[in-house]
Structure formats: structure tokens, C-alpha cells
Amino acid sequence: MESDIELMLRTKAGDDSAFSELMNRHYKGVLNYIYRFTNLRENSEDLAQEVFLRVYRSASKYRPEAKFTTWLYKIATNVSLTHVKKKNANVSLDEMNENTGEYEDSEVEISDDIIYRKEMKKVIFKAMETLPEREKIAIMLCKYEGLSYEETADVLECTVGAVKAYVHRGRMKLVNKLKPYLTGEGEYGL
Image (cartoon, rainbow, N blue to C red; front, side, top):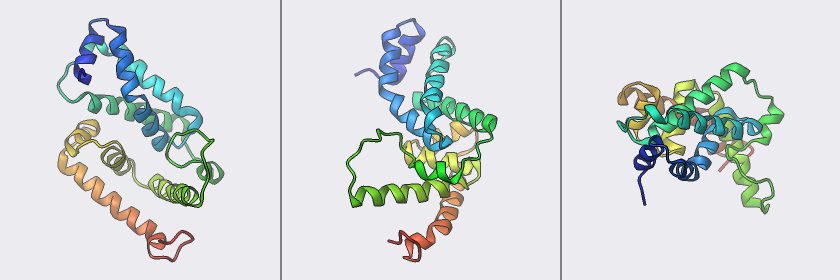
């Protein structure tokens, strides 16, 4: 199986099938990342397509200096930030309650466990929305997207130490916000 970098270099050389393979590999991950970032289901697919359009348009300038996914998530972060700032995304509580942080089909078998997990995702997602931008991005890239601290530092254009600090501060803020749920005091206490 070809690496992402090899596929991107083939795309740079004009091979559209290589670009299609890159999209197949990474589309769902980018879509979920954008959805978690923006909390807007209706715009997530459009924004994901915008990300891949930018990747395609930038193929001629691509240089394999870092992992492909680092470059891809940097583009996805920039597209998401631009969209959120443009829309000044003040999501209503009703909209927030509809979103779970995963882009998935709505026809899913419903059980008590699934309902509980969805409710906990909503609570966590709501808490994530209150974090400062860099802390939120650092946690999402490291935790949800599996990027290393180094790759996240490349995306955020900062040092690895700064990323570690963003993740640590963000996690501490989340723990404080989620304490009622972790100690049994909240509606979904564990």
C-alpha cells in the first residue's frame, strides 16, 4: 500500500486516481474533525470538500517535509477557523443538544447504552466548546485525530511545549467542568 506522501506526489504529477485514494483514506476523519470543531452538521460536508479542494489546488506546491496528515489537518483547522469566525458561530442550546461530536447516520439502533454514550458525548462536546481555541484544537488533534504533539505543534505553528501546555490546561478545565458528572452529582454521574 502506498504511503500518503507517495499518493500526494503522484497527485502533484497529475494522477487524479492517487488523489481519489487520499480522499478515500482521510475524508471521514476530516469530516468528523470539522464537525467536532464547528458543531454544525449541515456545513461539515461542504467544509470537508473545501479542505480536499484546497489540497488538490495546492498539490503543485506540495513538499513532503512533514507527515501528510499534519498538512491535511492544518488545512482542515484553517478552513474550520475561517468558517467559525465568519459565521460567529453562536450555536443555540437546541442545536447543541442535537449534536454529539460524530458525523454519523441518524438511523442507528437505540439502546440504553447508546443513549447514555450520546448524552455523555453531548456533555463533553458542550464543555469542549467553552475552551479557548488553541486548547480545543490541541485536544482535538491529539485525542481524537491521533496526531503526535510534534504534528500538532506543526499544525498550530507553535512549540511542542506549548502544545503540551494547551492539552494540559484544556484537560484540567474539562475535568473541572465535568466534575459533577464524574462524581455522581450530575444527571449522568458515573
